[in-house]
Structure formats: C-alpha cells, structure tokens
Length: 507
Image (cartoon, rainbow, N blue to C red; front, top):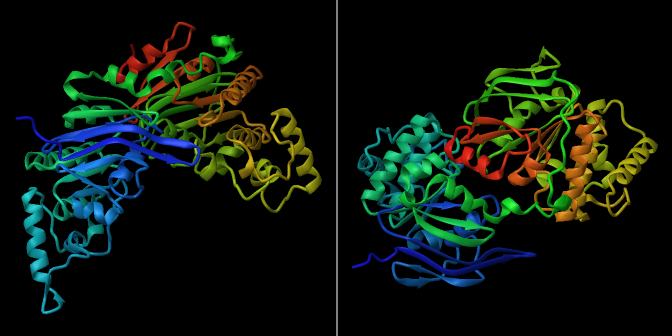
C-alpha cells in the first residue's frame, strides 16, 4: 500500500504587489524522510515555507495535513497542527537555561508554580532521546551555535513531531557541527519525523536528503529522488532557461574583450578567509580586467567580495594593493585605497530611500572626505547633474527621492555614487538583479567600457551568460570554496561552468 504524505500542498499560489511568488506549486512530504527544497534566489522557497507556517496566507490552492485539508492562519496554528520550523538564526533566549528554552511557554507546573525539577527531568529525557550530551541546567549561551540549533530542534520536535522544517541550519556551522546535526536528523527521520531541509550546500543535500523538490521562478520544476538526479542535472534544473536569458542582449553575441594592458595586479588576495564565511582563496585582479565570480546562491561569492572591501574582517590571509601588503579593516580603508563596492542589496545596504538622487550620489565621496569637509551645495549639484547625464538616470531630476525611481535607475544611482570617487577597483555584486533587459544591457556596456579605460572590476552574478559576456577570467565558487579559476578565452561555455560548480573541480 502506497504511503500517504504527512504534508501536501496542491496548486498553491501566492501573489505580492506586482509579483507572483508561487504559481500553482505542488509539494509532498512523507513521514520518515529528509526532503530538500531547492531553487535559486527568487525561486519561491521562502514564500512556500511562510505559507506552510502561516506567516503568509495562500491566495489559492490547498494544504493537506495527515489527509485533512487545513487552513493555517498563523505560526501558532501551524505549530498546533504539527508543523515546526527552526530557522538559520536561532530564535531562543540565550540568557535562559537549556531546559527553560525547551519548555518556554509550556513550563510544567505544580500548585500554580513552575516545577523546576520536573522541567529539568523532562528536558534531560528529551535530549537523551536524541543521544545529546547537554547539561540542561546550563545557560544556553554557554554552548556553541551548533548546540543551540540542536536545542531549537529538540524544542520543535517536542512541540510537534509531525513535520520539522530546517531553514538553512548549517550556514554558520563547521564540518564537525554539521555531522552532529545530521546525526540528529537521521535519528528523527528513523523515528518517523518528516524533515524539510533547505540548504545551498549541494554536498550536504546529497549526503542527508532522500528526495528533493526544485522550484524555479515561483513554479514547480520537478520532484526527484536524490539518487536519480546527479549534481550537474540539479544545477541545470535550478537555473534552467535563465542560462540563455541574456542571449538577447548585444544581438545575442558576447562582447569582444581585449586583454588588459598590464600584467601587474592591482589587487592580490592570498589565502584570504573568514571562519564560517568563506574558506581560504587566492585571487588577483589587474587594472583593465573584469574578473567574474560564478556559483549558486550561498556559494560564498558575496562573502569573498566583502573581505576585499573590509566589510567583513579576515581571519587569515593577506591582501596586496599594487604590490604592498595592506590591512583593510573597514570599508573606509578600502575606499582610501581606491576600492568601491556596490552591494547586491541596493535597498538595505546601498541606497537611502528617503534621500534624493543628489544626496545618494555624493554620499560615498562625502564619506571619503570626512564630514569635517562638507561638499558645498554647488559642488553637489554639479556632480549630480554630471553623473545623471553620464549614466542617463531617469528622471533627470537630482531632487527626486531615489525610492521613487525604477530598479534600473536606482542601480545607476548606486553606480554613480561609487564612480564619483574615481575607484581603481569596482566590485559589483549582482548589479543587474531585478532590472529590465534594457537597463541590463546599459549596465553591461558600462562595465565593459570602464574596464577598457583601465578600471579593475570584480563582477558577481548568478546569471552565467552575463558573467561570461563580460569577464576575462571566472572564479567558480561552491560551498564557500573557490574551486576553480577559468580563463574566458571565448570558448568557455555555461555548461562547463555548471559542470565545475556541480563537481567542485575544474572541467
């Protein structure tokens, strides 16, 4: 007799203003399995989890739990129905004991008072069930993040043991901690718990998961047994037709790239790393060269770039600028050495929506000068108008609030902010994400022109064709490691890059 899913969604649809986040998605989760939910950024993974946990109401479709159609109106109802979630950031109280965290809000009582002895006894029983060696009377913050994750799982399972959703639980764990987590997950699976596992680490998916569901652009791409879909095929299904998405630009042809005029590197990183962020990597970028970084979401692309800008401080390794060892302790240090960084999240880490186009454009230059040397209003107006014209920012009103501009024009404002500082190295993290095809073509042309004029560029994008169109060399990252650096001689294909991502070695 065929096993019945413990959780099933049928034709789920969820819309936000101007965006269809989930478009008729089906999903099944069976008892006693670990099931991976896969997809790139914007695929709909987070939205599906929020629908399942009652954070967002579905606009269409149905959710079936243990054979019964249910309407989940909020996280508490989801928990009562048997669905618990443990997020990447542990949502517990570090100042309380392990036992208190497990039973917070559900403390055993006697004569109206908390029965502390019973709480500790039951907490000890629970952690022993999963063969964990934890002192339940100790403060939670006396343990590592990995153990705190396990305590969150113990609490979630005790609250409800039907469905456990683990959303990026390994993102801040080392290898030994991941193995400990996987041991607990296998024990829960063997006890019949259904586990939905979200992770960007392909090796972990293939190590722990029995089946996987792949989403792409808010739609179901397919459901597969892990054993029947190899990593190259998985990556292809996650990215799908996006590989060819930029073929329409520049007449479908890649721009010709002349070799940089100099062999001397402007910036060299050697053994650069940050624990829990990115493993040691080497990278050199010459003036006039575009170096692309390729890899799936979560592969370490952004983390590698942030180390070069001083936004994150390195644990090890060295950086040399024009041959001189340099310690970039902060973005201010990087700016002083001619490095600019356009964040992938332009709304929260880049632009200030309440400020005007003019104010946003001059922000980095003013920071570099120091607030004791303010730019005059006349100088601000002159600079803003110059770059509005140079980048064709629309509308051309420097006093317009930047929040009211289109995505493409917002990106141009962010580029203008950094170009005004006359950088020697421009780091662009997903500069064309979320903007229309025309704006993408303009920004790509600008990047190529800047390199031809001698600027070094580090270009990060999830769209492989875009990376190949612009880059002289491509660094490939997987699971926070730089696994290859490929020379883009015109013969480098998206398929070869995909194979490198999937295999973790140069192809």
